[in-house]
Length: 114
Length: 114
Image (tube, rainbow over all chains, first blue to last red; front, side, top):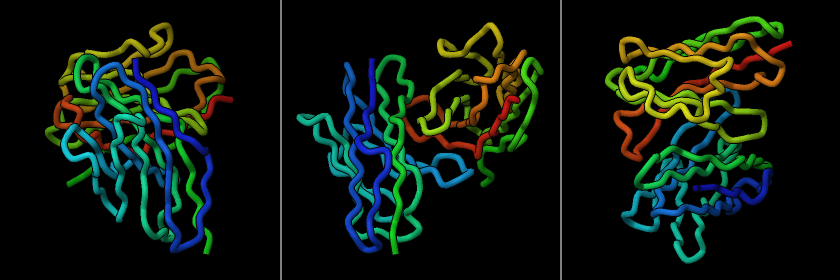
């Protein structure tokens, strides 16, 4: 079985400040990990993914995430927030073998204050 | 390249009525997914197709939900009869193959059951 926990359903930062969105996972086999972003009334868009290559993954729009096996974490960061980053962010895990279905966290809504 | 197309975008029906959602995946994508997204939650997989075969439908409530992908391209998800608790966003996604890679999401259909 696999699961994802996103700490903090709402995060608010000032424009230009560091963005840190937390994600912890559990998986019985080596995982694949993903971050998706969802803007209002739109579908999900992939930001970045980890599939057992480099542990520091760089994505679109300046986001990156680091896979830490010892901490079972895959936190999303961005050095400087922009107003356009305001959205809902979802962490997801997929087992690297077997059923391999995506399991999503409950999401974190990011607000960016001017 | 056109993205995943879903229609309708919004649907309001009364309980006990039937409803159908349509999805056209990205051209060439063999794998198609239907997800359910409740308010404030991450998407949950309902069914996955590999070409025209439903290979993972363990989360689909088969008493009232059905889906088809007859020619291995577009797909229809049906609810009959709809219940109040079915109010949610129904997302369709597609991918080249089921390999842990990127899933591309459509904008979703927001269903309201009165």
